Amino acid sequence: MLCNEPEDVVPYDAQDLGPLDRRFKAVPVAAWGRDAAEHAAERPGLSDLPTPLVTLDAGALSSNIATMREWTQRAGVDLAPHGKTTMAPSIWRAQRQAGALGLTVATPWQLTVALAEGFEWVVAAYPVLDPGVLRLLSRPRSARVLVWADGVEVVEAMAPHVRDAVVPVDVLVELGGLGGRTGARSIGAAVEVARAVRGTPGLRLAGVTGYEGAFAHDDSPASLAVVRTYLSDLRALHHRLLAEGLYPAVPEGIVVSAGGSAFFDVVADVLAPLHDPAGAIPTRVVVRSGAYVAHDDGFYSGITPLNRVGGDRFRSAVHGWVRVVSRPEPGLALCDAGKRDLPFDEGLPVVQAVRRGGTGATEPLDGAEVSALNDQHTFVRFPGTVELRVGDVLRLGLSHPCTTFDKWGLLPVVDDALAPQPVLVDWVRTVFG
Image (tube, rainbow, N blue to C red):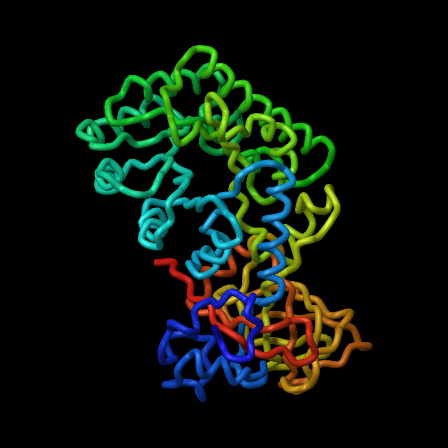
């Protein structure tokens, strides 16, 4: 635990990093060669850190993890948060410590990282076709891993690599829909996949799964109705597999899984009644929301289910900090960050506040907006009523955490990004390969 931190604060990576150096763009020159934990224990301020910068807010991270834990408990479902959002094992561990059943991953490599981190329950949300990984999963292991299949041809591609399995590979049949992403395009097609899994040595049919976020991108009544219809079809698929006796005995539990970060409330409404881990046919409903842990000030802040269900809200834990480096014409400031540093796929960053000269107290700034990003520059437009000078540092609200973390191998954790003078208290290491 870092010095001067409350005992209930989860430590991230500073205690294990060792000396800081130039490999990470968030590390200030003055800290090169310094032990990361000792440096963080001194609680340096933002003015001691370089720009451009993306920070994590310690309080917001902890609050978001607790809020999601409380929601899943009320909803009566399990949580296996999607690890691809952060690819930060120390954040994964904090989620597990707060009660997450396991972790969800999106690639074979991410799966191996999760297993190396000791996760005992992993949803591999894709068809695992890599021969080496399939052979790894076919050997005795302490972790339960569930992979996906959405076509008979996927099952046939897996079969040669699992026929000599010492332990079976658990498979979830993925239901999709026309215009969606992966997934069998009808309940009938999904049943054929289930039959293929049941008939393949080395594989075990363990449940059904899908991703409702492929069918809606806002929370309008029409979009919510589409999501609900899809989830009802997923529930119907599960009941059909039960009725046809296709499920084998699965002591660890049949799994019904859905739920990204945008519609997990609807997932609970439709699927939570199936959750019965201690029943005659043990069944777990598992949501896979991942973006909640960092949240944002853009896409997810607008679509989060907590806007609909009330109660505690998620808080943005990710912010950009950029320095004005040029004032080439009236009403335009160029800052020292760009697409290599900030997300832009789900909306441009939003100007929230300014630190005058890079050292002043953080104060709100209205009227300025980001109009464009180049590789290494941010274009900020502002009216004559706003004053910006070279050397000022802006705090930016970001949109889409999933394309924020992958730009930073090491992220500073500050106590409170909204405080007048935030201070560094820890570091988070990401592993994106």
